[in-house]
Amino acid sequence: MKPTLSLPIKTTLIGAIVFSALGFQAKAQEVITLQKAIDLTLERNLTIKQSQFTEAISEEDLKQSKYNQLPNLTAAPQGGFNFGRNIDQSTYQFINQRILQVYGQFSTQVTLFQGGQLRNQIIQNRILVDANKTATSKVKNDLVLNVVTTFLQVLTNQDLVKASKQQIEISKLTLDRAQQNYNVGNQTLADLSQAKAQLSTSELDYTNAQNQLESSMLTLKQYMEMNPATEIDVQKPDIGKLSDIKVIYDPQDILKTALNVNPDVLLAEVQQKSYEQAIKVAKGNYYPTVTLVGQAGSNYSNAKNTIDQVISTGTLTPIGVVQGTNQVVVQPGFTQTYKSNPFFTQLSNNFNQAVALNLQIPIFGRFTARTSVRKAKLQAQNAEVTAQLARNTLSKVIYQAVWDLRAAEKKFLSTTQTYKANKDAFNITQQRFTVGLVNSLDYNTSLTNLNKSQFDMIEAQYQLIFRSKVIDYYLGNPITL
Image 1 (cartoon, rainbow, N blue to C red):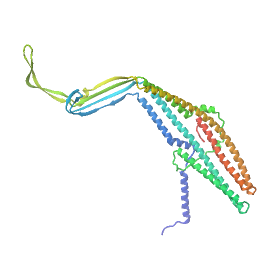
Image 2: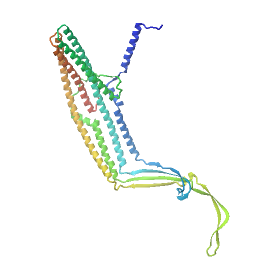
Image 3: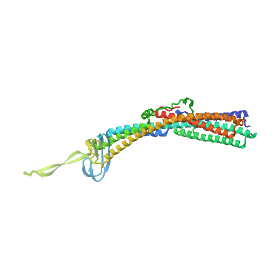
Image 4: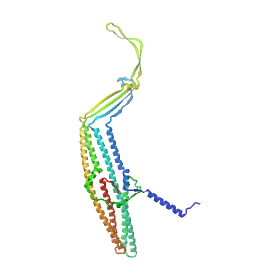
């Protein structure tokens, strides 16, 4: 017989499972503050990593330009069998036999003068490293501003969702009253239909707000390189602490500070210096190049033998006569034995060295040097214009940002007053509607005005906060909430 569980035990187990699941879900949600969103973005974002790789490559280029001042060293060993009639490299004589020959050479070369190109290239590469570091800072700053924008948009959408839920509850209460009044004959079917339509409108507003919230959350996760399926809880800061927002700024003062810290301007200026240095590098092609060359080498051949012994044969061979006396001149006969010349002995005996000073004077190179210089000058002029354009753009953006901040403050004050007025008007209308002094059309109109004014106030509030953070961005201040 199988054991059975009593109903209380079953209920307890089911409850434990449900609460465990809820607890796991709550634990799975990662709490994201603005600072954490910024930190995760700076740590994970792939755009930053790409910029850092470019920066690392430029650092390697700088190291290599310094290494180019050092002498190089190469070795060229070679060995092989020769067949038939060929030249013995050890004796430079023609032979007709198979021989094994091994020879090699070490060579080194150092550039003594190259029109200052080596030094100027080092300077240019150092500037390019600074430019790429500035580019990385620009990417980070732009991403921080985008994260702040998206984070505030998430907070805005969260409040809009919350407000939409509240409007749905109000619309449901309104529909209940309308149904009750219709049942007792105090309202018409048209009034009941309007109440139903108002509830549908509130539900549509909630759906739209929920969709906007999910879209902004997805964008925030993408900046943090987070799995879209990850559940996160965006922590809302205390907006009440941000009520005292500075809105009066002198654009010229902001511009003076921003010109020294803005990454767009700094990047354009550093790139301009790089192109100016490139002119000096290109001019080096006009000058001669002086290099010092050193070589050392040796060779080996198994065809090269040395005399081992000279043995007399005991015979005399006439080789001529003495003029005048006719005395015969003879030569004793002998034979020779040979032995092979050892490998390392030959390498030692054949060791040779050479030192040379090379001078290369450019006379006519199809105007390549002149073209390089002209192109470098044009690029430098274009970089100068680009830098000035970045400064002009920054000036326009800052003036616009100051104006936007003031406009955002005015809009927030206006929407706040409008919301308060509509809220008071709705409360009165609701009281009168309850006792039958206001028809459903006027009631729904008042409720619609209240909903719209509340949404407008929420958006204006976060827009004001965002505009103030834009000013902090251009001043180089940390962006916090």
